[in-house]
Length: 301
Image (tube, rainbow, N blue to C red):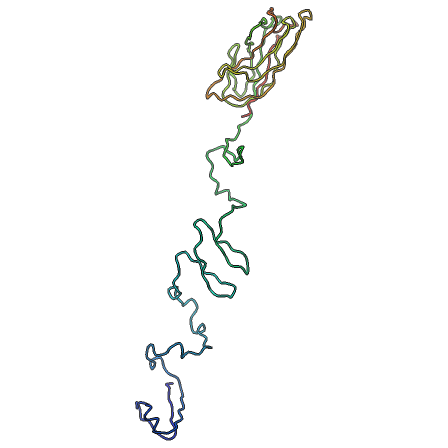
């Protein structure tokens, strides 16, 4: 229904006649009664101002959901974030420092930009190793690092064996390398060389006994690295008298590491206070092989 009106006292406007102030003034004190509604086509574009709108008008009910384009919002600054403040108003959070993250402070508090202080957990898919067979450890400064995983422990036993009633080497008053003639080596870590043996780089534990005879007088032994020209493990010492005429064993126990970059030649060396035949081990002569210097090696890394 189009907008219509009547004017009293009696004056009839013809169709399409314009209502002007001068015509209304002719009526003295006119009363205008409006009826109906103005169609959109009857209202010129731009003719309704915000001042003419009632403050109680519900604009939201007249706009379909999701019908306001983002371009209709006020322009902002590149990197700003929108959020609701304590008054429920939509406000902006200005861009933070590069590298910061958007941190929520919980219900009833504004969000903020914050520096990352670390995480409590890391997904396993995010960890990239530096190679196969590695594990994570820390160095002496507490820094996290990748380290090669130790392999299985390898074991070998080495000894000097002679036939029954055959003595060991004669004792000497200068450093002398003891014989190594036999081995049990399922892991293949030892190569024998008569009076020496070879090991690859790694960390080892040695547990051995070095034979002697009291006729050799005072005696001691040690493990020597001829490749690196250094003593790796010191053995025990014995103080004896030739008149005792008895045999004994010097302990040789310790841990050592080889890192020459290749094969390492080692010797069990021994020295005595007297040079005598069989001074490094007398034969028992009981029908069994005579075993003298003997030791077990564990490669642990």
